[in-house]
Image 1 (cartoon, rainbow, N blue to C red):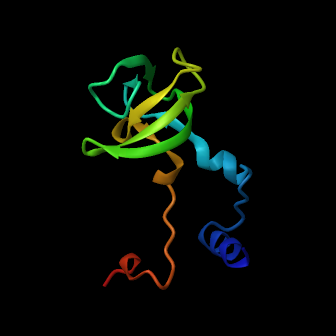
Image 2 (cartoon, rainbow, N blue to C red):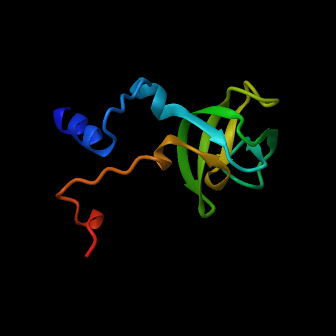
Length: 112
């Protein structure tokens, strides 16, 4: 925990994160102009509703199908509020998109 705090302090001096870890890990929002909320992780499945850009959601789980990562979400704002279904990864922003952790033992993180 100390190393993580020290790293965050070095990266952004004076920044304090206010969100609880569980809350930060589950929030998401629609980035496309519109996105179908699907009954299954498939573009061919039934649309349960449509969410629009910046509508917020909570992420429940994810799976890989048909060449895409799909996120099962529950919409928390907008006209699709309360609906739970699947949204394709290129139509949504999830917190994992922002997080990149590099440890010294991971040679894939190092360039040159």
